[in-house]
Image (cartoon, rainbow, N blue to C red; front, top):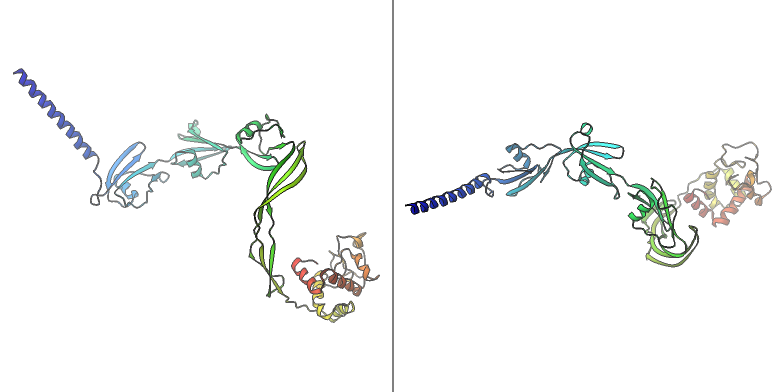
Amino acid sequence: MRLRLRKSTTFISVSLAVLGLFGIFAASLIARPAAASSENGRLISVHDRGKETVFLTQAETLKDAFKEVGIDVDSHDAVEPAIDEKLVASDYQVNIYRARPVTVIDGATRLKVVTPYQTPEQIIADVGIALFPEDTSSLSRSADIVGDGAGLQLKIDRATPLVLNLYGKKTYIRTQGNTVEEMLAEKGITLAANDRASLAGSTTITSGLEVRIWREGKQTVNVDEDVAFGTEQIKDADRAYGYKEIQTPGVAGKRTVTYEIEVRDGQEILRTEIAAIVTQQPKNQVEVVGDKVNLSVTFSADKAAIMTAAGVASGDQEYAAYIINNENALWCAIRWQGTTGCASSYYEKFAGAESSSGVGYGLCQATPGIKMATAGGDWRTNVVTQMKWCHSYAIGRYGTWEAAYKFKVAKGWW
């Protein structure tokens, strides 16, 4: 009887165990919905502060789905995928990153923000603070609960800006090093036997400090230089003279030049070019320039008589009159540069003005005025004598009055 009793007990125990496992399996099926189908909705798994919430929904967006199940999301919180994104898949894994207060300390600036981001880089980008590659940042819990409240503290450690003149090439850099020696180590710069530094390695790094590194004696250096582009002009007879339009912008070329330099006590005393290779040919700039003279200058008979007496041909008088009108609108023989009106008699603007290269005089504002003495002794007051000199100057320098006029229009002086 005992033996049969034991067998019966064993059977009952095994049966109960099987039933228990079945119950656990059934409970798990009840607790977690099966994969969603187009008929019963989409399966949403929400991960929020270490807790997972799983539900089915027919909503078209996460925002509407959250309303159905009572999940509140603040405007500062971040949701992935986006809370307004239209739901099209059968199931989603959703992460909610809850916003939290962060005090950003950037030197003397303290900025309190609310952000859902987790790393210093993400928080800095969210706040919109610009960082240089050498700047560092650290994130920790705020130690000042009273001042900052319960939250995080993001501290930015700015690198110090300075100037590094390395073998003649000046560069603006930043460093976390406290001394010149630490800065050089940070930048991977090792001084060779003939290298010298303008400051001792123990010198404290301060903002704007300049550190110069050079090499004593003869050495060669390679320098990248620009090659200037040329200009090609296309004359357009339908455009007025003085018109210019860039049809094709010029592009500077590049060349690598090898120099032999000699340095003594940190100063370059000799530089000799020993080789040059053009790595990029320059491209000429193409310009369209006007070549049509639209000259319409009116001048009185007495002005025409002055030009005729001075030997200016009638066909050139419009060009000459244009220049004189722009140099000395009153055609006043005794007008000094910078004065107004026309004085009643000749006078010197200042002692030595006649021979000063800084002041013009007469019809065409000869600089210095005494140059007109080659046209006659009465150059100071006689307009015809002055016009003779202007005529010889225009022909001697430009070849024709038309060429002189074109130069005047293009440059503003002649």
